[in-house]
Length: 328
Ligand code: GLV
Image (cartoon, rainbow, N blue to C red; front, side, top):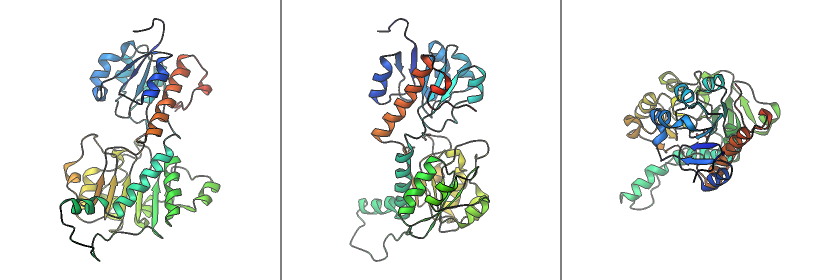
């Protein structure tokens, strides 16, 4: 039953129960049906009465949605990346926006490492071979892959997740190079023994593994494209756990099919949930359904952090008391 006087919060998808329970003691909660609010028109239809929105990275929080949400005070994203939200429009309408950094860093670092190992050691291909009944005995030349020790991992976007990946890759004996909008502090650079490469082309040319860990912005849209695949060595591997549109997916499929690069580990796609058909049939790529942060612990922590931001706003806390507000 709806309690009178409590604010109302729309959670756009089912999320860990602990988060819903936590919010329920302070607000009237509606949890959306899976997938319903990936469509802008459904959100526009329903948003008007809500004081707060806890949305997914798949929820298109457009200017129109925000304008229709006349009571909205905060949009909290169940994700660190927030390219799905029109932040400028939100701020113009006096709606706060929050995301969930930090709590997913380690899960994503683990995942990037796992994906890299899966691609270089050809897990998918080899498992399929076994399942197809083709394994007839140990083969000296079967499924040879690239070893990581002494190879160069080039990271584009050396924020928290980039650093978590670098840290793990160091333990596997990799050398770290990186490009970032601004150079990271010297202490962290030294700890990771990471080399800053100001010139992106140089990073593409000299990385055995290129990893994308940057946000999606107008500057990073199709940062990896036909031209950059031409720069990458033929034996190199691309890892993308950032956002799909950072890579031109058609160009990636062509690069894999033509052997311009040796493989790819891809967790994010240009038009999720659609995957480019040429990528689905391309060789040597591990394709996963955007699951880098998908651990029980992390998904609950993400939800609780977003919920905390919502409750802070609804209880009129000062901005500096609200976790992870996006200010620009
Ligand atoms: C996941 O992709 C996130 O941005 O949290």
